[in-house]
Image (cartoon, rainbow, N blue to C red; front, top):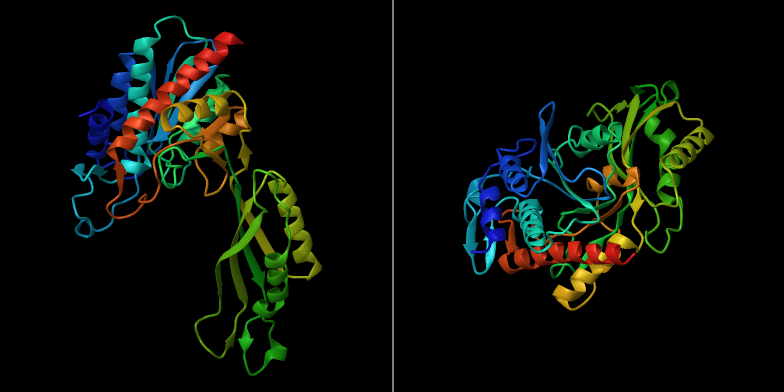
Length: 381
């Protein structure tokens, strides 16, 4: 059994349903401490975080990830117990196998292998940022750790987030950015009344319908070479008392923008308000910025990762910004180069979540050779 597989099984066996950690970070910290890392546990409210750093003054290469997992649902729906790591037909089954305890195991073992062969002073420090609040509300996890590091003027230079980025085979996709996510909660006020006497009421659904259609039809931007055009989607809408003879007095609409680097959250907010004002609606609108867009263009980090992937997989990965958000959105605004690279994502959050055992070893090699490539490029510069 490989070191990566053994560690992955140990982590999966710990039922760390968000925001619980169940000792996963302690296991990782013990192995990193043996390599010379200074390990700091940062607890914010219900969330446990680990910041581990080897070195004190050079550019920082960081592996980032999370030990928390989504609930498994009814265990009876699984072929094997979700927190009992099981090997079958070359696959490792268990909640978190792909998202993302397999990645964490590969990262730790990759650093062990790298340091075993690179004893000379490195041109960069090594670090791990691990949270137990990625699958939850993401309030007290990576976001709080980054705020703490910023207060101490500790900067991450390059970061690999171990999210399951691959689609058909391991390392076929590198996420080198993510779209921003901005949620709006809109309340349109009317006057409740009897449907037989509409002149004595004001229907907020009718009042807002044209405005909502315009929001859905608006061309917000054209995207760019890395991002598709910004999209607007209504996710929830509600009005009425449930009675068929009552005109509602209030309409609640929740919508979300997934936006590119062509727009800022402030620009979107301004355009939405101007559109609603044009229709003379009586409304209230509150916003939640889930994360700004970020992009890491080809350069030091992307080149090192691509070099490692080409060596291990014999073909380069495709750069992509598709998909949802990740904790990379909290790290990138500090100026760090951030990419996401991890296992195939076909079974994440599903019953019978699994990861290919050979992929775990291949991912370990890719992470290790990324450090080798980065080391070589900095030595030559």
